Image 1 (tube, rainbow, N blue to C red):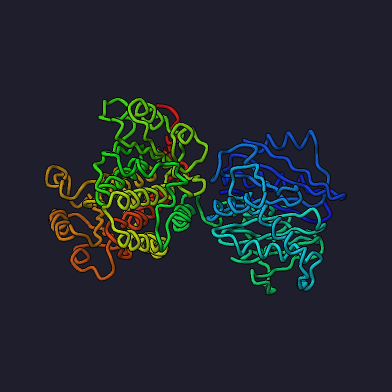
Image 2 (image 1 turned 90 degrees about the horizontal axis):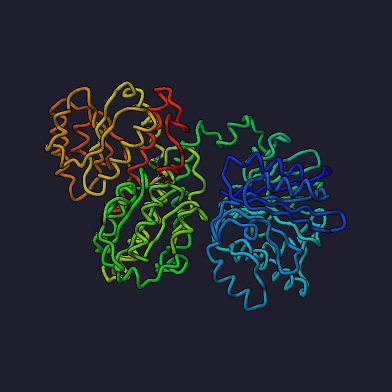
Length: 625
Ligand code: M6R
């Protein structure tokens, strides 16, 4: 997730901005930049691809003088990581400077519209449309007599910002400067975090408190649809309608490490709780109540390909492979396309039947996994239809395939993949829905109703997260077990594999995921009192059959922990513990059903004293074969 910093006060701005950016490094980034406004109004902008130390070198060579400035560390979402795409961005006259975090959903149409009005763009980012839109609004308002909002030295800027944010769709936190408004810094929040640090006649802006923790512990967290107007003397808050807002600052008690994790004990837990947001951001602008396959344009994937392909291969490793398995069910059910999901390290050494009518979908959080890259290179020899589902724009994978559907989860720091998995499932659902629609397997009405259900999923995940105390309780009873079996059927089967993988890698407990119907063909021999069974038993076409499979396990002494829907009776009656998840359409259920399993693995590992964020022997990105 991009990091924003800002400063206005009596001190030189650039060392404070640089320090703030370094303190936000844990959020992940691919480029960085800052702008300092000098006394004479001169705006010095420095940007660099890569690490913050590259920016630091530039600053050493040419330190900008000024007591007001903004800075940014970028996690690419629109456009590759490069100096041109690094923030800050400016308007045509280079008088407005903006740093932004979030996604502007309507950037494409705004860019086209502003282009026809003569604006020239110098980056591929969605952010740059904001600078030009603000320029346009300033110009328009200048020529009109406009009422002055009270207490403001530069009412025109405020009004233009107000107009601008009304035209933006999506999520944004931003900070901006205007050359013609000295002693002013503006910060805006809509659906992305932004905090103001209150010092002694100095103010700090940041996406996250650690950026200014050494300078002040008094913080005003901006709420959605709020604009802060900062000068060296005061901080005024308004809502988007221009009404003044007052709120007491909070005093932050966290230490630096707690602050980095947003108050959570571990990055993994923070990332589990970020999942509703990861799904929302991955859906953002790609689906809506009046669904059209609009995102295909962004994908650079010809709709004809989705219409025409006769087979899909999904490849990935670990969690990404499990997402691929879910994708197979989705694509087969929704789009009627024959699919294979395969572990990339196996795929690369087979001779899979790929032809020009095959689409290969490579799934990877990092986009740097060696086995997945090799599978892609192998596939490229035989088909040109390749799509990446990836969380890291500009990674090797996204550079090697013609089309990428980005999962907008933000950087994942915990080694165990959680929110990236939900992003992958969301992206695969989008592809399957649109392929289904294009191939005539889904009517417009079915697509619309599925889309509505999909948009409700983040709310469902928020509900599941409330089960955390119940999960903790179960983990306290179970953490000494050495083996667990995860059972489910149909689209829950890959979720069993993923639940078992989470438990293995975090708590070092041996766990197996099995399709419940397969149990009688062997694994049932393992079952006795020492082998608890985790069952994914939400309502589905195979619910009754699963009940039968679970009865067989209970009859052999298994202690049953079940994930069920509200009102469940049959499975609940056999279970020692149940965890409730909301009922959603069966094909979307992996998106909510995995959440209690992630929490379970997390708490089991904590009970056993394991290093949750960095489990032994594991690396976040496996770049060797
Ligand atoms: O970055 P990728 O998604 O390509 O990584 C794939 C696997 O290495 C990764 O999912 C791994 O299995 C995680 N440790 C799972 O939590």
